Image (tube, rainbow over all chains, first blue to last red; front, side, top):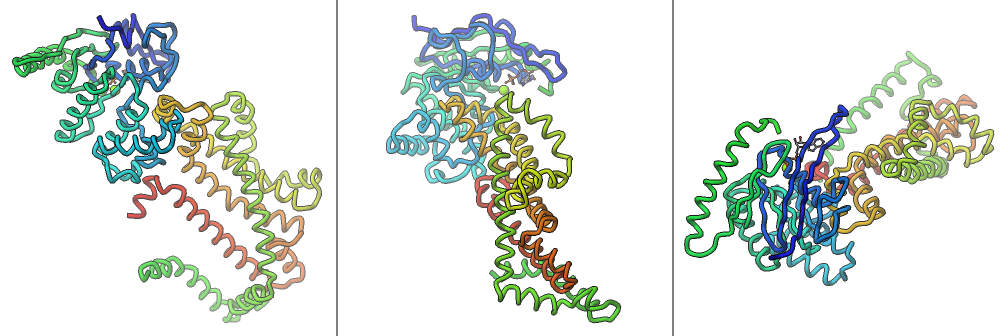
Length: 257
Length: 258
Ligand SMILES: Nc1ncnc2c1ncn2[C@@H]1O[C@H](COP(=O)(O)OP(=O)(O)O)[C@@H](O)[C@H]1O
Ligand SMILES: [Mg+2]
């Protein structure tokens, strides 16, 4: 059995709302993500998917030791857990190249190597020629790809991705899915991938974690690592299966969230 | 280039209109040359000030005072404003002082500065610094508070230290608002310089204005006003160009350029 990259044990999390009350976003979540595996989190808007990623990333503070990464309790962010945020979060005052090299600058990677790697990553995500562009000059999809390159630049063992392809058109989305799959297979990174899209979740991941509406709990964990001749048919039936599960949650989720 | 000239002409038209009305009224005997000297007389005086080098001397002295105070206030205001956003003790100390100080007319403290620092340039520059400090500090503070948390989180994830987050993330992210504070403070610095010069003497454009009015030299007074207005307009436009240059990356400049 593989070792756990991320182990979550009975995690709950509340936000302090502005009126002083607290909003329970996650309730009693337990999850083990094996090293090198690809896991998708699927659930309706507002069920706490982003919150869960922020907690694993160490951006939101929580009492206790409910989350372990490589056997060590999470106390804060670190370059071992690279995140791609839902709203890109590129630094608008830096060019594409400036964004991609930033992490390597902080890690004291030598200049020549830094630029080499950055140029290669920018090419890999299809942004060659846009190195000197500022984020405000790029389309949504291009920004998202630059953000992915920036995160990959520090070579994190764990990739946390928050609906990374949500803003892309169908064609670019397909290309990016394929590239992510290749990166995952080539590097053996652990990927935790948040999505709305059942098909995307089943196609990319080995496990799909279906979450319930707020307060988010884990409703079901479905194995989706299909291989061999019948893979296509089984993907299709898994999609239909999961869709049935999710439909119930999506149906009476609060529309505004 | 041609389009640029047309645009400038359009901008200057109201000013030219004002000068034409001024000249017409001055020529029309409803007033005297003492109450309202003609545009030509004033222009001649401005020109002779330029030719003799006295204008350069006065403008130089006034701008030195104004910009010295402005720059000290910028460094101090940005430092305090950004520190307030990350250090609770700094926030605790400055928050009430700013609430009280911001709405107070700063010039009211001039007698105290004169008492403490004497009648030289130190007093003027201290007064100007103090007058500029609040707008820059409050804007830097608000700008730092408004930095998107995802920027800070991204930098943390990429391995930035606390100090690097301040210099690499909070400072550039707050720059648009810091520049807004500076744009508010710049005319304040010019006004404060003029007022301190007119109250305390010691040369400069304000000192010249004071002198001209003492000797009932009405063309001199009007010439001084024109000179002050021109110097102010140039400084403000330089500041505006600086903003555009520093915010090349910002949507604000993208849309204006394209
Ligand atoms: N900063 C916050 N303060 C208060 N409530 C929040 C905050 N962020 C998120 N929430 C609430 O927590 C719940 C989960 O949010 P989120 O993790 O963003 O959901 P998802 O990513 O699944 O759409 C939502 O109901 C949301 O309204
Ligand atoms: Mg979300």
